[in-house]
Length: 200
Image (cartoon, rainbow, N blue to C red):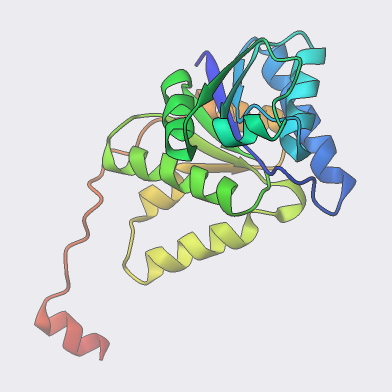
């Protein structure tokens, strides 16, 4: 593992704990000499993350869309940046440059990026670890939702568990470094009429 894509909010959240955790993750990525790949902006937790990694001597690559670049959102101090046409291209390029994915707390975009990366792992399109930094229990509801999906027969437990969730940056990065892709198929055998009757 040499590079990590981090998805995070372009807002900072209600608690200083979110900023502190983002900075801690940025420093830890730099300390381990991983390249940080992220969305390229100076806004919100994304900016905090990049600032911390750069201040710790890390290499930070930003991938930003033309629209956001035009609005002046590009972080001015990055090691390197690329401007792409749209969000789908941005995500694809981040995936190309990265060996693993981490989600900090964030909104729709952050969650969508995490789930897309995990889905591609589930489908076998890539074999890259996905994780979430669980600041203030932010990802507890997601873990509960995934468990509910397992219980309701929409996914296998192995695919729920392939998303690493940890509260500390070091713990999360250690788990990602040791991660193994699940070997089970995503498809669940449909219930037979006999088992369906029993459930009814």
